[in-house]
Amino acid sequence: MSVDAEVDKSAPPPDPAAKAPRQRPKMSAGQIALLLVRGRTLVVLVLLVIIFGALSPDYLSQSNLITMTKHVSINAILAIGVTFVILTGGIDLSVGSIAGFASMISGGLLFNGLSLGDGKIFFSAAMVILIGIVVGALVGALNGTVITRFGVAPFITTLGMLYVARGFAQLRSNGGTFPDLSGTSARGNEGFHIIGVDSWLGIPVAVWIMVVVAAAAIIVTTRTPFGRRVFAVGGNERAAELSGIRTKRIKIAVYVISGACAALAGLLLTSELGAAYPDTATTYELNAIAAAVLGGTALSGGRGTIIGTVMGAFVIGFLTDGLVLVGVSTFWQSVVKGAVIILAVITEQAQQKLQRRLSSRTA
Image 1 (cartoon, rainbow, N blue to C red):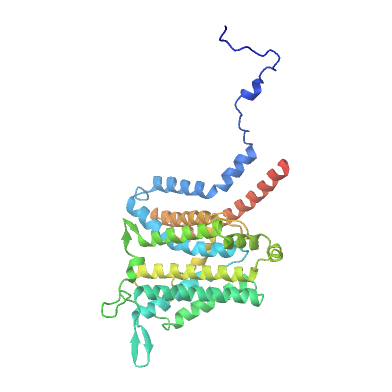
Image 2 (cartoon, helix red, strand yellow):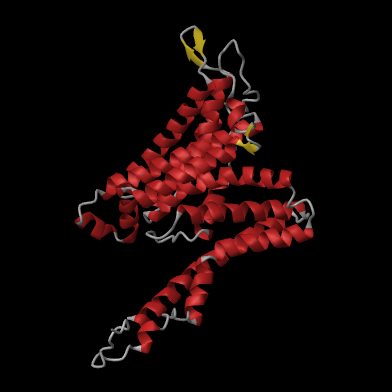
C-alpha cells in the first residue's frame, strides 16, 4: 500500500500571484514633499542644533542645553494655552500681560502679605502660586465672556486686555518692584524659589512642570470629549452648534485655560528672577503665538497639536539662545525671528494646498 497521498489532478493549479509578497505602493514626490512639510518643525530644530553646534562648542554642552530647555519651558507653557484658543479660531494677545499681572499679585502677597484691619496675613508659597493661577484664569474668563456675550472680536478683546492687565500690574505697586520673594520661616511663606530655581534629578523643576502641563494638554485634546469639541468649534462653528455643542462655553473654557497657563508661566519667570516687576513677560505673547504657528497650528482654527506647539517653542528658544551665543545683535535677532514666523505661515499655507491637491488626485 502506497503511503504517498494521491494528487487530485482535477484541482486548479495554484496561483503564483497569491504566494508573491505584497509590495507597498511607492510614495509619490508629492507625498514625500507633504511628509517633509508636516515634519518641518522637527527638521528645523535638528538643523538649528547642527548649525549652532558647529558654530559654538558651548552650544551642545550639558549646562547650556539645560539652560535653553529651562527658557523654553516658560514659552512652551504660554504657547500651550494659546494653542487651545487658536484651535477654536480665536487669538489671545493678552497672555504676556496676564503673566505680568499674576506675577505682581503673587509677588505682592509674598512681599507685603494681605492687609486685614490692623494686621497682615501671609500665605504659604503654594497658596500664593494657586492664587496667581486663579487670577490668570479669571482674566481669561473675562476675555471669553466679552467675546461670547458681547460679540467683540477676539483680536480686539485680547488687545484691550493686554493694556488693561499691564496697567493693573503697574498699579499694583505704582510701577515699583517687589524685590525679595524668598519669604521667611516666621511668615511661613518660604519656598517660592522651588519652581523657578531648583532642580529635580538634575533637571529644572520648571521643565518638569512643562512636561506635566504638556502631557495633560495632549490627553485633553486627544482623549476627551472637550478636546474633540474644541477642534469641532474651530473647524466649523455653525456645524458644531447644530450638533449640540455649546460653543460659547467651549470658547470661554479655552480662554480660561490660556489665562491659567499664562499666569503659571509668569510665576515661573518671577520665581527664577527672585523678584516681581510690572513688565514681566512683555511681548511674550508674540513668542507664544509664533511657537503655536511653527508647530503647525492653523490660525483659522481646527488644526494643530500640542506636541507641535512644544516643538515650535523649542525652535524659538534654541534659535534665540543660539543667536545670543554666537554674538548676533539683538536687532538682527528680531529680524530672524520675524522671518521665521512669516516662513512658518507660508509653509502652513503650502501644506494645505498640497493636501488638497493630493486629495483631488486620489478622489
